[in-house]
Image 1 (cartoon, one colour):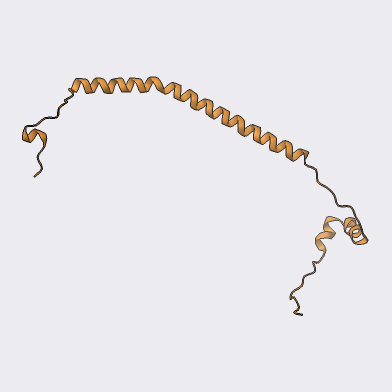
Image 2: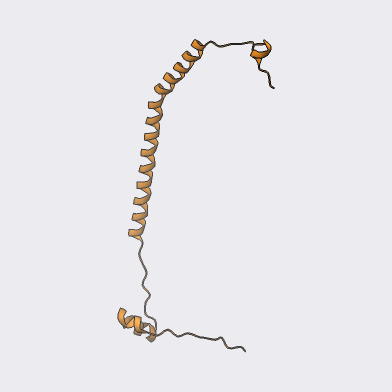
Length: 105
């Protein structure tokens, strides 16, 4: 059986009263309530700056995409001229040349 300080008649060197503990809890609670709005303001400000940064990044990406130009390949030979003259429907009908087996040499 384990004995406590009260059972053996010993006390800790410092003893707090119930009134002191209640006032300490009350002061800590009031202080936390007073500090809360300043924390919320900084949190809201951080959210606003983050949203602004995201918007700027998206605008930058959009600007880069709009200024990006595609280069067209010029027809150099008769095969290129033939392929450029085909419509999209004709291009989908072309059969692709496939090698089923690679011959061994």
